Image 1 (cartoon, rainbow, N blue to C red):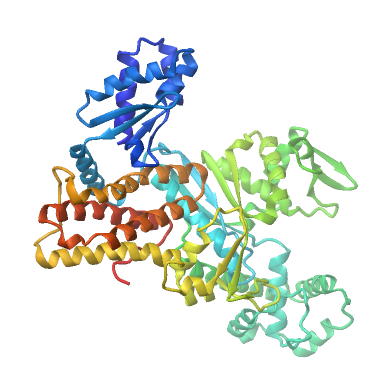
Image 2 (image 1 turned 180 degrees about the vertical axis):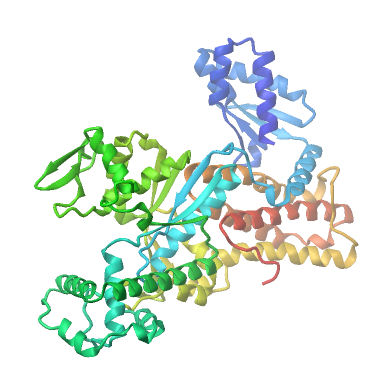
Length: 580
């Protein structure tokens, strides 16, 4: 519908406006045509008069009057009003309204999709939690967000690739392996277990599943554990070095098995959460500084060649202050080891090298200070920083009643994403994670998510869909099939349903706006308002007591509302229910 009237307006500009060709092209790039907020302003509104008048220095209302005369002769148009400083409010004939309802329903699950992205490739990297333990509820928000924007961007015509970056080459993996080693040999009880180790039951589970042949003699373990430093961080580092030195082969086996088992848990939990990835990218695949052909060596060498690095106190630094960072950053430590930043730099170079048009990183809000240094590294490597968009996501605070749940992986006592899915289901969890702007704090009440009343928004929206499904079933008890291909939206008592049709027609624009802003909560708010209108209409109108002709019009129109709710929930990764 929007596209049709855009074309009519563009035809007027090209053939009847008399404007200069260059001016016409500018006007076409700036004017907007939208579904109106309220039916009192018509079905469609455009600012074409205002934009044209401002550019040409002419009276915008006069220009709008000329375009109004052109639109009034169209078969689809019932009336046009000039409003304000050059807006046009267009009222559509009821016969054309029926055509749009029919056409929308024929699109089925594609209704709301567009080709806005024109096939541009976008890579979204999200979750990417260290594979050192199960995902907790804090990770769930980033998982729901990344997956939802992937679906929304695909619906807007982008080619989307979703990626999980596995941090399998850093100190945290060594801490995981050391923790499993200690549990494997029963070195400490729960109270005395090193504070800097991973203490969760899952560590014991990993140890229990490791072949007993991997154990070494207890007298050797006792010798390794003597004279440990008191500082917790120093203690775990000493243990790591001791275990690596004692038996390199055993250390590697424990580390590899631990990584594999934790990753399997993460993959399974994400699958249960309806999140999948096109690619799992291992940090270890970047190679090391010792390998001159590695991706990490290649990236740093390129920066060195361009004169963007310098040496100070034995370390190699990248000058990131010029890009707005608060200080320069170390790439290679004074002992020759690459930093986490160096690995991230190489990883982002590899992303760009793979040919994506745009990169989206979904990061926790605690990574805010990391953005500038990554942008600086991209520009240093010869890429535009505009290629990268970082979406910060605040961790969610989860409550059971008034009790806030714990999320610390190290402590071992925390509420996992798996726990949340088991308690309220993946759909409810995804919905509430997506119910607020991503960079705002979210307090998530489990008890509310389990309730069955209008205060629980997912229940309220699902119930609207189920109500229409129930109405269709009752209609089919008396009729052979649901209405199809209406010739005209009827007047009379049916007109109360016009607002629902109008609200449903906004859906494609909502999906585009959600994709442009990377904010799935826009769809959540839209579905909430649509559900509210549906419930109000349903409660006030005895639909199956209407005349047969009105029933057909109403059922066909409500089928569109049902389709919109289903498609909207699908973009959020949520199933629409037929019964509740």
